[in-house]
View 1 (spheres, rainbow, N blue to C red):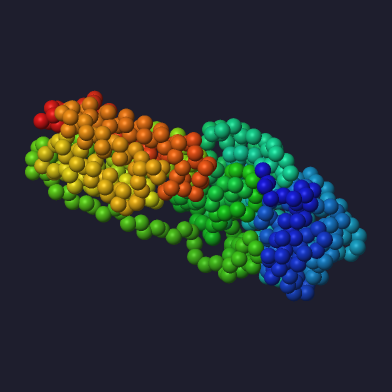
View 2: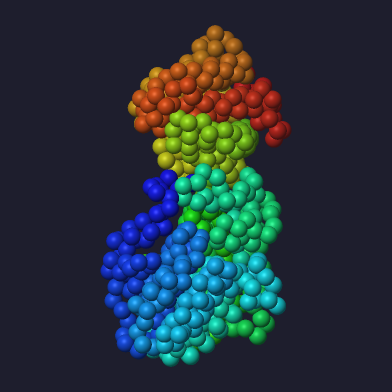
Length: 585
């Protein structure tokens, strides 16, 4: 819902006023909309755009040199009035005639149509352009019934550039209808939007589902399915639009991947990564593609893909300079998307262990790291939830990423015949590199310190594992400067190490000692719910974190439990050697 709202009935006009204040170099606020701050030359065709508010940067963001001469703003998702359209069109007129551009919705069609009639009665030469790019709203045989959605950006940009180039009204109108016919859009929504002042969404999309064929006025779509992978979503969007391009159409296309309001830019980039190769595979050349928010629907979560197939004239106008809040660039040159020269990971040459026992030990460490990664992947969501209550919410993802990378690196090293120390050191560096952040650095350094107690020529002994745990604890405490009671992973790590040393000193075999130590760590992690944070992620949350365990302490406890289960079940002996027998020795 909209949090910064004020008087909901005045939300649209208040937002327009704020926009005009910040972009005073581009626009001038007038009643019901905005005009170009610096009008175009006399005799130019005036391009007047408009529709309901709630779609920023459509439509006020389209006003500027090379784009629109004015924009008329209705209330949220509501057509502007006939009177507002007439008034702003008169003010925008430069003597060359007027194009009125809007989306193909009943209210807009009615009000812009009436305004055009009234203006013609007054002697103005006015032409209408109702954008109709939404393929979900009608099939190709009845294109005139389609809604105008994100295609507005491409259509109006090309029309604005044609007008800026000095074309006559008849010529601009012909360009307008041509680009309208050659533009198509298909979109999906992951959640509905909420009108300012309201608490309920206009429609709900069930969790982990998406609506297909959405509109931008809160329409819920024509179908629903589970949210797919980025690659599958890219294929849904691309295939639906590819079917729209006539066989004889130009193979050069302008493309917009548009966010609808609350889908993050990074998500769109991930989707574009999957989309980009599809154009090349289909024999299409990309011309200055755009990824971002250009036609939104308040806080709707979702995205749409728009294609405009470009002939020589349309491409010229698409590349032409523009200076507006939504789009600002000089003449664009070059085709397609640059190839990314991504360096492959360096090939690492591992020293093969001189002994079979060393190679066996390396394989055992890799087994342990792989099982650790599986456990953390399963716990990612719950750790993230705990961290969100008492930290910053990313701990589960970081641990899962780090462990997965660590497991892959460990297996590569083990497959090359490396011993336990090298395998674990390699895994440690991969963990730190992929997990990132404070936690990643501490885990990477902790695992590397652990590896210094191991020997590449033999299976790890109980004494070496105990020493490795202490090395790890001391390194983490030195780097992080945390102590027991600070509500960090140290609260679980110290009891684990101290219990392990005590149990082994008492003569208990490794598996029993390790499991007792793991339970001590787990209990200590649970007890952090009673602590106030003095360091780490939860420090800034103060009292808010009271009553919730520290995610770092809990993940540490879960990890040593996982290793204990491997020791107990003998899974690390699956390469043909009885690890438990060697550990007891």
